[in-house]
Image 1 (cartoon, rainbow, N blue to C red):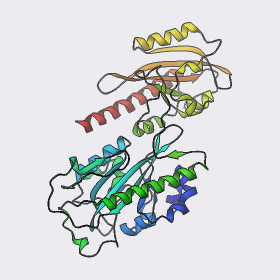
Image 2: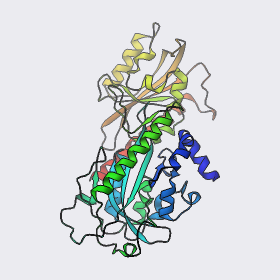
Image 3: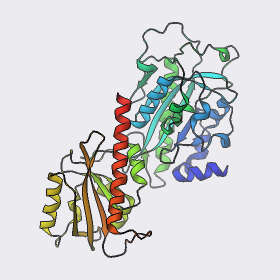
Image 4: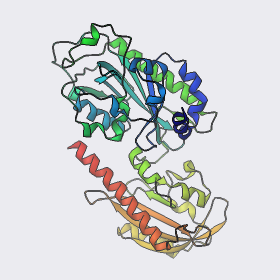
Length: 399
């Protein structure tokens, strides 16, 4: 139980809604992609009963333990892509209970967004047992047996065939999909289904999954308003802002220095990522920064020639380092040792510009004793690795 509470503390608003969620009759889990390994942080009573596990056996674990020899690799890849692209997904999939008996079920997954900055902070996964017998015909099935959908709609067909290699399922982004269950709802005849035969969810089962997702999101949204960290089921985009995927957001969030990421491909080159240290240094909230050009840091005594130097370095796609007078939200000034550099993706094209800020007043000293130049280069290297790694993964998955 200590493990469960420790993980849920990472998602504080879940503490407010646990008792309410426990009253839901649906079978579902909530995961946190911001925690290493993308673990489960909540599992409903119905889900645990169907799966055959206790809550302590599930909370904090990844879904690797629920896969089996007949779990379809293609379906796993579809789930992996849906999580990476932060999309809703409905898919028929074969998984295994604690006693290792197989089960067919409809898996409906939906991201939960932070309303302030548009980041994905959770995934909700609803599992609906497929009660019908498997069909003998496999004609007319969709690509890879899955349907990615924006609103959790129906009107599609799925099939699941083949097996899943362990190394694919071990990826953290697959964790949500592996936690799928059914226990007492099936009779003994259905528990002996031939797992090689495809199974399809009915329209009723699809509607049941959508209804459950909507109900859960409604409760999460309502109770999150009490914590000040409002969540929603759809991304709330800021005007003119290009949002980053959750994978890149998570990687950048590990960099504990002041920096912003700028998208040169959008109008007015807005900030698309701001580190927590940057927000602390400048006094701005994240929603006051994202979607805006960096010029708001300038003030009456900011040197225009230095601003021109920065603009020229961006225009010529070159790095530059300057000393510039900037202003916090409270109008207090500070000398900023600023480094600007392009960030290229795996194909060599410029994807972003990164600006690393160091307060020269001495109040922003590095605890490890690194020089300002070393700190800037450290941030640059970490950002470039994160961006290139993501673009490599995206290129591999799309090929």
